[in-house]
Length: 111
Length: 113
Image 1 (tube, rainbow over the protein chains, first blue to last red):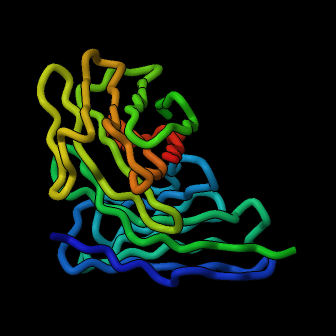
Image 2 (cartoon, rainbow over the protein chains, first blue to last red; image 1 turned 180 degrees about the vertical axis):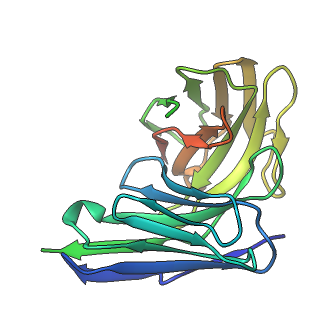
């Protein structure tokens, strides 16, 4: 089946720094999703990408859908303490909405 | 965005007992809901797809007789962990996709002693 490889596994950064993470897949996805999960909570959708090459922003977040449709990246600019959490990429594996998740990137922001 | 709730938020039970987790769509109807499981420091793994009015479909390796799913109405799906054991301790999360976007519930932390 499709596998999503997400990196890095974790990042420890200082407040104000930019953060970048990416996901690659062994096969093509038609949609890329980026979620954030805080401790003890369910994932919350940050950005959805539907078209190869698409670059989408949501505040300080920017994500791109790779041209090959096998990769995507998420950038967080000027990080703040509330950016702490685990960020997951995900892609649907069928038309009904079943999602395959990446392993997650844990982001820790220090003041 | 759409709101999905779960109840309870956390539950502790003795080994051998059964636990029921509810997933509700609060402001939309959902013919399909999804149940995920997340072990500590791991990603979400899809367990099953819950279908209103019909049987759930389970992912490979998930025991349907152990994880009973009932989707009796368009706003409620339940997951029952039968004869729970310590290895079933996990974070169970449901989701639904009312408009093409998948929304997740807040999760249920299950601890089996």
